[in-house]
Image 1 (cartoon, helix red, strand yellow):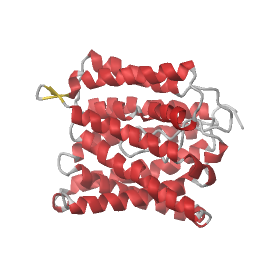
Image 2 (cartoon, rainbow, N blue to C red):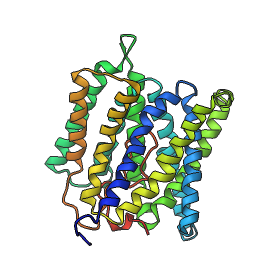
Image 3 (spheres, rainbow, N blue to C red):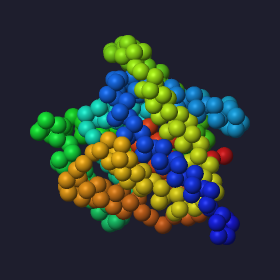
Image 4 (cartoon, one colour):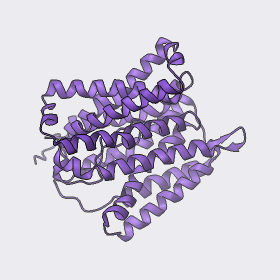
Length: 331
């Protein structure tokens, strides 16, 4: 791989833009949820993101990967959408409706630690001392973040909101681990598009059967603009950018941007929503970040690729496992 000075400048910029898209979803989601129900936001987000992603696949000529998929992989991709998009959207936006965006950003970021834990439990991967310590540190940080002053609503701990955030992290970790075999045989963007389609259909049906679309129809144009912006940028633009950059830069360089997502999300929430927290939140957030880095830190070859930084409420990563092999790179 070429390493002359300045070669990666454009990739760094594109990765930074992608990371900011994913981080911005937290404060923008919080603003949108003041006007619509979490189910409604999730449905619009998935539909807008799916249309953007399909548009990219058609224009780039990558949609041909669908024809090469086996019937089993096609069905499996659709089933994966239940965990990766349907359940995830419900949980993360339900959390955002109850707790500050910064809290949600940090708690959802633990999905990377849960991926490491589930890989050990489900695939019998060896548990190194560093990984065990990292998972423990991250979970300890979760406790501090949850008990921080920012999670108090009317003087009481909002356990429901924190529970939804953790459930979102676990659901996407399950999706990531269960998608290993399908992703090893197919283009990850095609798999993500199929999973997203099933998630969008299920969430739209659930919304119609429960809260309906009346509040959505009555939402002001500004809210609609934010909802569409969220789906198109976090999914339709960010997914292709991420995998395009992965083809041109080492995994060790790309991994830095994974851990910037919750950091940017907290900074943007402070700036946009004026959220303020005590020392327990900041200590807990630092422990979560340190823990997910330690849990996934291992020697990586030039063909390995880190997971897309699915640390926003998108989810923002199309099912890649931490430090996967060359098979996950875009065709």
